[in-house]
Length: 217
Image 1 (cartoon, one colour):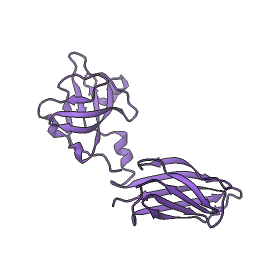
Image 2 (cartoon, helix red, strand yellow):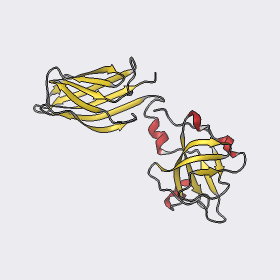
Image 3 (cartoon, helix red, strand yellow):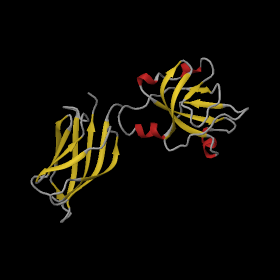
Image 4 (tube, one colour):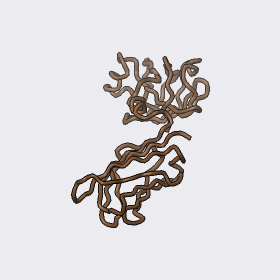
C-alpha cells in the first residue's frame, strides 16, 4: 500500500456548504490546482470551521473532520467522509467559512513507519496440537486477511491471493515452544504470489511473532 500523496500549502475554502452526507466538495475558483491529482494516489484532508483558531480547536468543538479525496475535477472533489475515527459533520452554517486542507494527520505519521510502496504484516500467531495457526494481527497494510493452515507437523501455510511478490517478500518468524517457553527454531519464506510458509522442523505447539514485508515489484 503506497503512502498518501502530500503537498505543501494545499489549502482551499468551500465555495458552498455541505451536509454530513455530501460526498462532493466544491472549492473557491482556482483553488483545486493547489491539491494533487488523486488519480496518482488518494490522500486525506481536514475540513474545519474557521470560526475556531485551528483545526484542532474546531475538532474538539465538533466542527472538523477528516475526509479522503478519491477524485478531483478542477475545483470539485469527491470525498469519502468521516476518516481516521472522525465523524461526518455538516459544514453549512450561514456566515461561516470552512477550510479544506491537505494537512498533517495521524495516517501520514503512521505511513512513515512503512516505506512508500511496501506492504507489511505483523502478527502474533499461536498453534496447538494439529490445529491451524491462529493469528492476532498487530499491523497489516495487506488488502485482506492471511489465512493460516497446518499442512503437516511443523509445516504451515499463509494464504492470500496476489499478496506476495517473488524475490521481494521476506518472512521473519520468532517463536517459542508453548510448553517449555524455550526459543523455537523457525523458518519462513515465499512460496508463490498467494502463499508463504512457516516451518518449525516437525514440531507443533508454538507461539510466534511473524513479520512479512512485501517490497514493490
